[in-house]
Length: 516
Image (tube, rainbow, N blue to C red; front, side, top):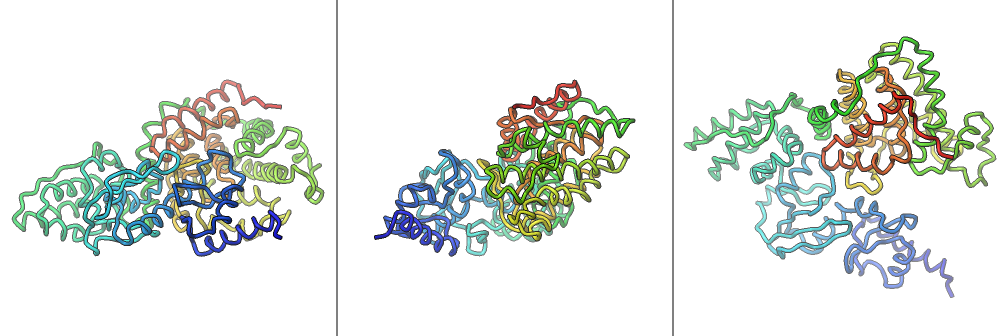
């Protein structure tokens, strides 16, 4: 007779077979009742709704949202295909946001289908799906992206409501910037005689600096006998010129976020002291901050480290070969990597204190910070040397966050734009706040992004003479909430206020408390 362990192993093998096929939305019929109950009891699957499950991790705490938010889009695609076959499409508004690279999990996902029930379907963690009974666009106006049926970009632009341009300005501008020629939308506008929509799109294109497209729309409509009046649907004018051929929507998104968020940062930050005259003294103060910084930064990431462990690692008394039986093995590896990376960051800091452009220095050096941070894991055999070769090559999800970072193929373009903006930015506060925020927004690495973001923040602080600033573990909840608000709601003010307040305390000689 099979033991409980053997029965669970059999259930896990059945789950693995489903996952090997790319199945995320698991129906009751996909697993035997015995397998399903064992997997559910042991935390390897979670129930989404009656008869539907998703894979999960048994070490996640009760009420943990990560599994759901990371599975949201593929689950919805599978569920909708099962329910409606091919006869469904996301709303024009949601389609346009996805075309613009916005993968944030929405509170309610709007779906159109001739078989829709005109009622919401409740999903976990305050999310829902609303299937509206409505006709679908022509087949030529539907595209499939990652399993989701979307309005094509031109069709979505001509179908979204006017308020979309006001409430989702970043998404709308990114979507507009992806149109290279007026002919993309003109066919739909002319066939339907859509004078109001044509005027709105002409105003929207002119708002982002695409004057030729705007003029071509107006000219074509008027030549066809339609009285078309241009109207800008946005609340504000765009303060920058978006490149006409950014490699991905994520590059344009970062440019727009940077431009839009600047105004909400400067007032929350103390005035920059200016570069210190005594570089050695500044670096000495940074070195003296190491233990407190390592303790708090690693604790924010969930590592259980003590000041004693940090000192042991720094002094060289920690022996990785003797740690295999040590319960602190994982934490000691992290602490050792932090020490190595910290010293590498000090070299970058020395460069910016001597007058080099901080954006250029960070661009050139951040890869070495990352490699040093995880070098002990390579030594211990937990990572391959190739794992430290560069940015991630797979998707990544942030615990408890509705924000889904850019796909791996967009990371390099996004990072190039980040460092370009850092190199060009003249305001110290904007560099510090947006440098940190956008780095973790992109999440370029599989692990260590929070630590890397705080290293980047401090190099940028040093470039303007601000002191090295520790984000204390006591501020973790506020810190993570502020990052989430910036990522999901595009509101940077709480994060700017938090970082600005911590910098001011450091300037006043009130460093983070080192907890025992």
